[in-house]
Image (cartoon, rainbow, N blue to C red; front, side):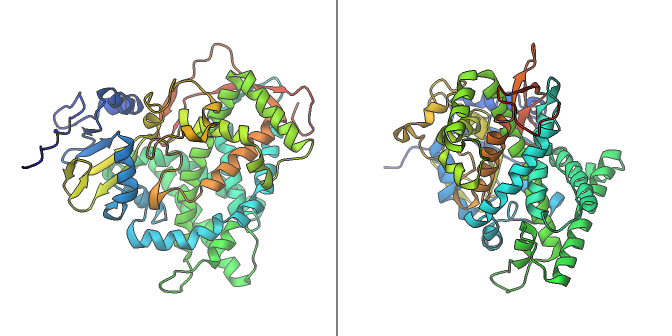
Length: 455
């Protein structure tokens, strides 16, 4: 007796000749979210002619894709393009090269290293808040992008660059970070057009590489360990060849870390501040916990795990407002996914933003409820909640990112209170990440004014 053939994989509505679902992708997040209404485990979309992209919506199949099938998949077209733009890195590599790069970089994200970064992170938050003017409107999204970039850049280069060089690097990194999301979506030929946008991006990327290469050469010449992440990367060696990373390799890792880490952290911080401003009760509970655990002292690395409610607030932000809208993989051989057999070259994708809002997995999914994470027995099934991915490609900077978020929120909340501007409609937009299109808030003092806040 033969088993029944699996049902055909349905195609999303709105397919047009030659351009596939290109018009639908003008509202990319809305389009991907709408696929959930089909209640289908797999849905096919066409992002470019001749290439099948299968959106995986069932958590069990996503779990299979990220864990069981990981050895037979590479990362797909979006990661190919990211590698073209920023260079080969642990984020874009697959197979054995990925394993080697991950082992090279792992020491930079070890517990002992992250604990040393917290003072740098906290100082950057304090300096940022000191520049805010009480009673003035603040573009929170832009402020969080700047803060996240400063925290990352100071962590990587804390002792390796003088102030003038650091400011130039910071400016170049900002241009690269803002431009890479657009370049990811452009065909390769469009990057070669002599447009101001392309020239600006290429010039900034070259500037970052020049700055990093100079810093690497100077540190290599002096043998001085500056105690930052750059020095850590200089000590890393290839486990197969025993050779250290080249300046080009280090620069590729830093560029990718800046783009992947800064944009996501800024989005999560923005959404967290938005939700705290919307719900004074949640904000009051966070402040009460901070007062109980910290007293009058600043937050430290050891406090990150001693603030369970603040951690639940961040976890709930990662659920309701996850910055990832499309994660891709690609089959390298004929692959069995659930009931379906997919040919080599099939693009697979899943959307964390849509996945985390599934009412079957998360009751009242649009309600911001940190207490939904109180009962460990109610944890989502595997594949249903993926704040940092899963499997061998799970984000290696997850502890670093959470430490950044806890440190930043704890420091900001005790310094100022942020109020949502009246009549402001908050819309989300999916570019490189899912972020608020605009988020303006008024800076107010806390009842107990703290030193260092601009007036």
